[in-house]
Length: 290
Image (cartoon, rainbow, N blue to C red; front, top):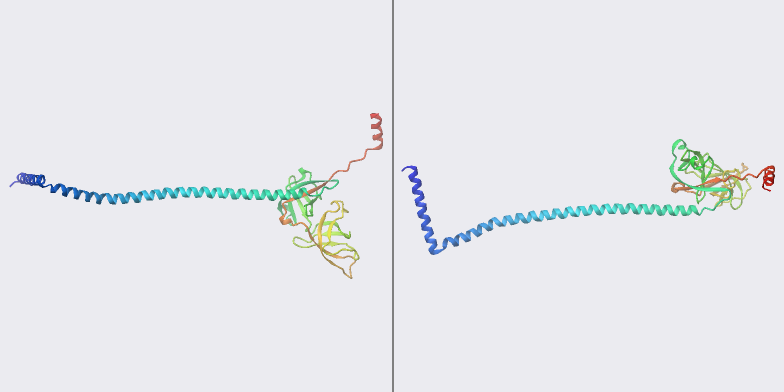
């Protein structure tokens, strides 16, 4: 049998089987029921994995979107928290500055002296770094000159050592080159206050051996050198030693101003004394006015 005949025979046999099954199904309906049940099972087997994959993908996407939104919200909250902390620090600093300025405003006015404020911008900076100094933010352009007194509300800080155009160096009491004429506030015993270096106590020299002075007494400026006004608090006596071989007492003291915690200072400028008119010129002016 040739190949075409075999194919024809297979087709005829297939048609016969199909027609037989079709006729049988029309009478019984078994094939329709079997197809329905089998098709539903196959559909279920296909749909269930698809549903599981869809559920997992949807859940992952929702969790991803949620986490992205949560991260963005967290980043925003962190940013707001940092901004609030910065604003709080700024407000605290402003409150501290306001309190310090209010204290400076309580400094009693001095006759014949002008008072202006300045800020400390550095410690031991520049050519004067070997000395115990601070740098303030005012200089010759603000009218500052050498030896101008520098004080705070607690007491004397030092004097202007060197001026620049916009900054100045202040020589502190503790520097070994510092000298201030002082006297006891209570017993009025006079001497010279010397610095002995950063972190060291001050010493008061040239106080007579029989002078009255006791530990705890406040030392104030005597005004004798003409640099500081009289009566400014400078230091407090910590110890008094009497020697049999010296004509003067050995006195130690501690400064009243804590430079490390100081941010603002006051500068004292002596006001010019008005000159009296010349008598001849005054008479001439009076005659012209008359």
